[in-house]
Image 1: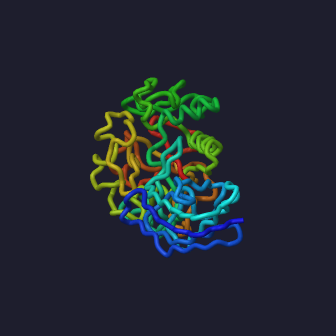
Image 2: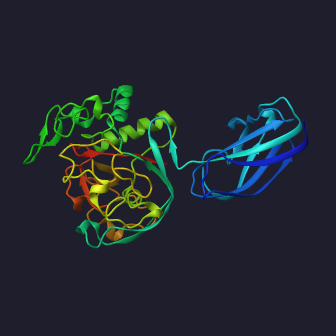
Image 3: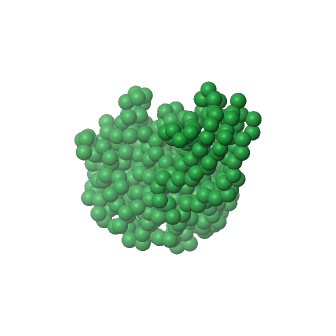
Length: 366
């Protein structure tokens, strides 16, 4: 039996966030439950925690197993949010003067212990370019839903953890190697795989935070599947539309030519500054969403099948690429690219089992 003599609801903002607004609190008891309603506005996601104290003793956190609804991590702004707390799931009784504390933490990014992710609020944008290559035309209206995308390209050390845990063999290891640039042409060399740099030399520990390269689309999917098992979250590659929306800066886009600037040097490692090698991720300027190396460093595999004329008949709502094909889409340019290939609208393609010293990837949720 719950006997509550007094209930006091408090709101505590744990981190300053000027865009964060909580209002329209109300609560009541119902049978052996405490019901809390509130509205939440701002640029989430947020972490919401419920705390309680009885008779003025120390504050205690309500375990997530004893409550359901809008509590925990990744709570987005909405009206009419509800938390249902069942105290007797973790307490023998609840008698006396009860005070509740709703703790709201502003979380610009979601992190797990493997990959750092950035939340992208869904929206509508103009995809493609009227001044680009033929496969970037026509410009067309696209809407995408909310999603998360990797703050950085997947690094050598992150991919190594996957291989160490699974003994996975990449397509380069199972076949005749990977392509490297030898000064005048691209040449496929046996024995070259993800453990090697862009010049064909084995990487040292100082390059652990470089983007992993010499990986195929198949290898990227295998990494996503492993990450899903490890975290219980459905990791995948971004669609081409999600990739371009995020690279442009999402709803915060300032319509730059590159991801975060009209000056390629500010945001990308490309053929004018890379010295023909990859570089540590995150050392260039981020774009409007806080994403790094979206242009340059390594081309990034997308989930979509490639079609030259897909933009002419693409659905407007969450397009996912052609139904079938022989090649997969890559986006963003690399250390080898000229500035034109580093634009946020540039599209290239390759077979899903091919790999090279300029191919990498970043992951996406949900």
